[in-house]
Length: 422
Image (tube, rainbow, N blue to C red):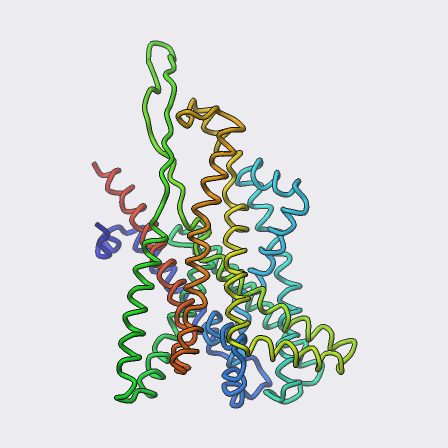
């Protein structure tokens, strides 16, 4: 049983937790400091009028709506990771380096992703500033101010990338997920106050249904994240020296949701691409950019179309990320080298096919669940008409999933320490 008080009894673990909390506090502090030369008084209404920008503002912890030093959050880094993983599909050699070279190959992958983050930060920073100026949300800025702000925004993003890597090294959750987690949690008090401010006695049944739905979603997220398919694995008996090894039966756990919350994050990043495309077109043709912006705004302000696209992207990215992170060939090879085999299945190619088939089937349930939870708040708003309920589901999904991941890693470190003291 996990007991949070045990964390503070281990000096090294307590130090890790304190450092992580201080790093997240630094992120929240930077998210409250706006970039120089802009007036943020009219931004709140502008973000409220755009569903997609409001959604991104949730992920940035409110840092985008006040044009903070870290207004982009870690969005550019996530975009860079998506591009790198797409390149792994286009160029199989990259995938071989990633898997065959082990930690060194993954270090190369992360290093290139960090390099790509810089141009993506510059592009996204310019796109957002240009979008806000073209829509009248902020006053036009001279070119030196734009360049200076882009440099500041890029530095802020790279600082968050560094914070995420430091947190990951402490093995108290994934740094990227925890930064997003901190941003979402920081907006909960405002969301609760907004819901209470719009409360009327006639809306009591709606609020009760929403609370019950939230509890059900939390239970469902926990169930899906903890759910796994156990594949029976037998080990042949082998003689080494005077000892007999093997002859036991174990199991290989395959999680229903191998991808965690990453598909949600990827889907949101991809939904932003049309907005960036509009700003890029504006450089060559302002008139064409205005027409394209009207089309994009019309499509994404339609809740039904937006929900359908969002659902499809989450499902696709769940399969995509699972295919990237779960390699049945490597697992089959490892089982064969250790003398393990699936009962009734030949080692090698047949084992690989069975693992791939099982993962494909169980991923279907995880993908559909993630997609339904992601669009459920939008459907709730369409039915109830209450704006305060529109963005809760995805945030709740990430918060619960990240909390479960952090709890598992803390429990793992506590278990190691208890074992060492025996």
